[in-house]
Amino acid sequence: MSEQTRRIDEEAALRTVVEGTASETGVEFYRALVQSMAKALDTRGAWVTRYDPEAERLRALAFYFGGQWVDDFEYAFVGTPCETAVRDKRLVHVADRVIDLYPGDKDPQFAGVVSYLGVPILDEAEQVLGHLAVVDDRPMPDEKRLVTLFRLFAQRAAAEMRRLRLESVVRAREERLSLLVDSAMDAIVEVDETQAVTMLNPAAERLFGCSAAEAQGTHLKLLLGDETVRRLSALDQLLQGRADAPRHGWVPGPFLVTPSGRDSFQAEATLSGYEAQGRRFSTIILRNVDELARAEARIESLSAQTEYLISEIEEDHGFDEILGQSPALRAALKAVSQVASTDATVLILGETGTGKELFARALHKRSLRPDGPLVKVNCAAIPATLIESEFFGHERGAFTGATGRRDGRFALAHGGTIFLDEIGELPLELQGKLLRILQEGEFEPVGGSKTRKVDVRVIAATNRDLERAVREGRFREDLYYRLSVFPLRLPPLRERGDDVILLAEDLIEKLSRRMGYPASPLTPADAALLRSFSWPGNVRELRNVIERAMITSAGGPLRLDRVLPEVTPARVTDPADEPGRPRTILDDRQLRDIERANMIAALEQAGWRVGGEGGAASMLGISPSTFKSRMKSLGLRRQG
Image 1: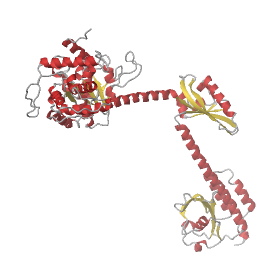
Image 2 (image 1 turned 60 degrees about the horizontal axis):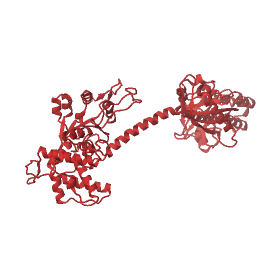
Image 3 (image 1 turned 90 degrees about the horizontal axis):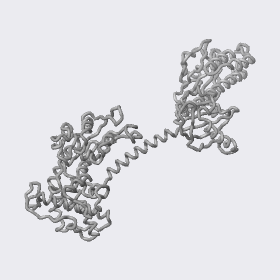
Image 4 (image 1 turned 60 degrees about the vertical axis):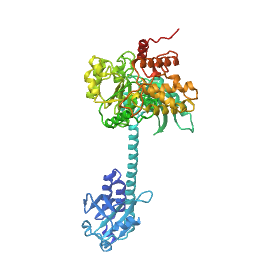
């Protein structure tokens, strides 16, 4: 085909490249480009595509063919002249018979096409972004003017494609920055050189109670107060004087922020400065430390609760495991294994010092909730006026001295077990509320109106005769039956045969390590003396006796006869004993004499102090009120 038959106006083509695409961007730019290119180069069709290297396909951004637009055009370039252009990253010009050269290209869209001119669009790193091509149903000779003009169109397409790609990267970065600022937990305030607010993030909107649009253009002092703004201005002046150092710093604090029309609060902050578009801006990152103080108070409260639970777990109970081999003890342990894996309420019955709390811990450890807390409440040790608050907690202002909200023991025990020791001492007016928890699993804190639900297993214990208390009207009958779903009787030490020897040997070993004394073994006489005593205080009394004997022996042989009153053996047959084992049975007078001797020994060791740590009552494991009552009954008075 002659040059005159292809109508190429170079000046018009250059004008088209500049003017035809100058006002367009994106998709509209590509449509204007290929339409202008097809007309300027006098070809049947032209297109610009985006390259997908994984799928090895080209998707048209704009496709103009035969005077019409072809939408959503996508094709696999393998076996086409486009493949050569993309893979070799060079201009490909097929002047004629393109179908013969690329027989694999059988797309009906290109029927009648005989010539092709295409070039890859590359980024700065020479990676293929896309492809630009023109085709015609006439031969397209290798004319310098044609190729030169085509390259001009290709450069314009590449510039736009690179621009759009960079714009996409910048937009993605801006979106991430916006998400970073919007998701920050601290308030972020941007101001210009006049200290007018230019931006607030959502955290700042919540802190100051206004929207970013409402704060726009207002002076910073309306948000922070005059004093805080003066502090920030002084720091900003200091930062501006740093020639080479970073322009950011910590605002000494905490300091008081006084927003206009809102409550003041303590805060800490950082300040940074920067310049943009010829203007100077400052960014203030502000944190309300009042909220931090409340969080720290909550952490302190939880830490106190944790310390309480740890102290309960680590409290010295005389021995770490239940020792003994007597039939009576084995029967009690069997009962523990039967009921532990259920959520049944257990009522532990036994004399003082028989290990009721230790059995409660064994029940909890073998239950279905061993990882939950085990919270102990001694019902006799809490004043009647405070026991309801101790059980159920209270709200702030519920009573004089209630300066803050406090969770009770039942809330602490949620998900675990609560052990109510000395349940027989529980005031009658509180027994109904305890019954509600056992029946409904819910309660109301003192001074509160909102009902709270808890999941707690209850284990109660007493050394009193609750059936008698029910008959005398001192204990609710319905509560008694609710508590005694599974009564567990613990045998006193006098019914446990040689267990007293095992316990004494274990106590000697542990107390020797703690006191730094050598462990003195029990003599046959010691063992006989231990067996002959009735142990009204049971294991707790045994520990006190062993400890007193070790103190008075000062590391030498134990002299149990010094700390135990003499008893007169008598023959008795007890079905709980092993066959043939002689036992001591004591009448009321002898038991009274033994009790009197033990109380006098405890009082003398405690300097006749009854209550408190190290007092005579604690030595014998009974409450001070009970001890004083027994002193009066036995006529015990300090001489002189």
